[in-house]
Image (cartoon, rainbow, N blue to C red; front, side, top):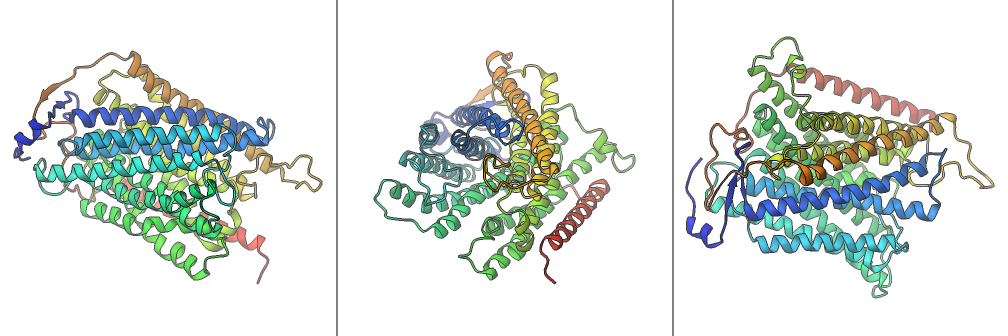
Length: 576
């Protein structure tokens, strides 16, 4: 690393850098405070959304049907927004600052503007939740027109989106600062490159949200007469589904980070991994089309081109990451001598480290459950089997909850001592938490998708339609599946509560750790630093036979599931 810098500029801005004695990471003071603030507020929204989830699963559990319809849709609206938008994006902003200021060892660009972004996001999130809990905005996260919420509902989302957009530009500005002040040599680290991908997709996503939410907000105040429902749905899903693509790019970046931290693992081929991120930028948002496959206002040609051709480039990117990340771990482990058979490297992995175990459980679940089901949903003919059934939230719980949320939980266990300078309380319970939460969510998503395959509706509060003159008689398997949705959902909520307890408890009661050394200028990455691989670039090679076997297992599972669904469709659609 070069020591070239602009000390005068650094000192004029009063920048202070803290070098963590455990990790060798260097935290700039303003960036550190912003990371802490965004991450902490994210956990608050996770707690709120998790408590609301109790009402959702206990109502969809047919034996309980806990909440009445009005209350259920209010709770479902708040749960979806708090979990899918506020918890995840607050945490992702912390990840962006970490991937720029910390990994590139530079000061944060425009910290005052970054604090303005944070305030706008907090105000927007609170404003939106207040509107929902007042009871007149139970329109679900999608908020399809002509259903209307209070103006404050849309205003809160707009303020939050503006704050997040500003934070993205602060991230881009920090990259410029690092380049100008020469705090790194060559290309940015792969983790930072992945964060750049997430930020670029975020700009597209937030712009799409503004294009449709601003006129809808004006419509709620009577200023705009109407918003076309088909136009709304098309543009909204450019916002709604693309927000998940931010998550994908962000949590895969974290997977590379954890591979580097836990194993000292370099990617199998940095060039291939960067190309996969580039494919995300070009094609991942087009997967939004699978939400519109039943819409009459879009041509069949448009639907087929987007979901049966362009989307597969994004699928290819995810499969590349799914190969190179565990492959990098295997290469690193084999270099340490774990070479017996195909899987000694995996057996000897640090399964007692919640950062690693959480990421690996997230990786497998995201690929086998979220990935395969997502491709199936994106096929126009197969989509007819599960469109608007509870299969859809089963799929996105596999991607957003198993993939993103569990990954962020795992990263938190690393950040508690490194960023927050606290010893983690109850480490034994922390070791168990990823298994409890992750495997509960595995079961939860599977039974959800099973119930959806049998036709159980996506959002209706009472699947039995009790009291209806023409109630539908579901097969017993559908009631069994929905009962298991309730049971496994509660287990996952317990896992989430354990995470919040460990995280917040560590900040309140955890032993204070050494602050580390401070300086007014950045210092190069020490060659012996545990995180040196995450802050540099390079490739490790392809000597990973165990990973290639796992990849073949995934491919076989994918083909079999695809065939089963085509066979199932043929029994439902009696045409020849």
